[in-house]
Image (cartoon, rainbow, N blue to C red):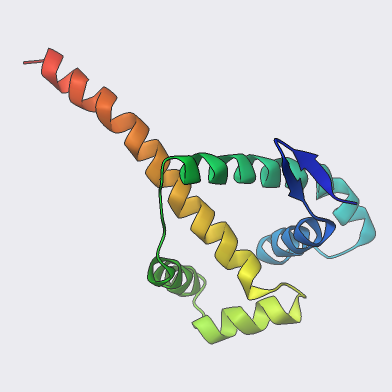
Length: 130
């Protein structure tokens, strides 16, 4: 069942995909009990992510596909896997590659939003210390 907030919707598909991604990436067995245990937390994370995405859009923060691909490569390296092996593991776990790509894109965008918001504070703080 879709969840709506702030004129946005988290679809059942998005929630199910993200739950599978969390289970797969954390090594938690994909059982009905584990799904029920993490469902609420994953939903809250998705809602937060959507709100962060809206703020990034409001501030015109963009993330190029090349940046997402490079981050995907870093994830593969940290996991001692190739990008193709990560993609195969996602597919085997029933997770669309786009689910991880969307999470990566949103993470990069939100980090830029935070950096933009901190930059003026840091600059004004530096000015006071002189």
